[in-house]
Image (cartoon, rainbow, N blue to C red; front, side, top):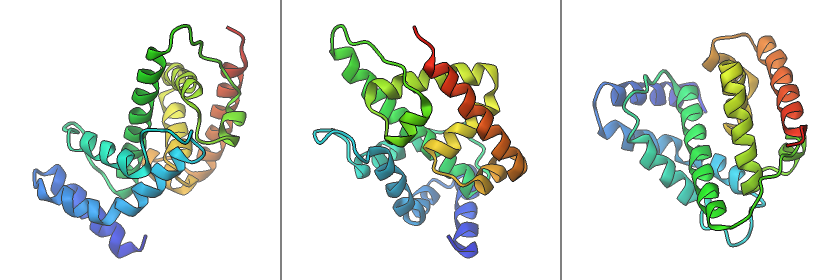
Length: 190
């Protein structure tokens, strides 16, 4: 994204935060293609009969975005971080609904590296990873946020650095720590 577009996105976010509701529609014109790419990455290699496609995922995300009243929008990177989190929630809610319909299904824990290699994660694995992230958040909320931004949000370490207000070197170190913790958590039996 060019600096001009990035500035425009930030200006629209601030206008939306300050109550100008039509700024959200203008904002979506700028970010829709990027959101489609993020949504497509989530759905890549999903089962053929998945009821959500990238556009449907983005539209569900949009519906949740307009309900965000407490978010203090900062900039473009912050917006994409929130959008990625909302897409993850949409997929988790969808997976949980499907799993609740199946009787006797057990959620198998898998190593994070294996999950990342087969991105996106299948429904039971997505639920297990969500539980791991929930437990990680209780232990270290910044590590959990870093995983959401890097893995689910597809952000580069420089963008994560900007959102979290830490150096790129710290992002790299914390990323290794988060991956190791999640690998251990997901490798445990039971």
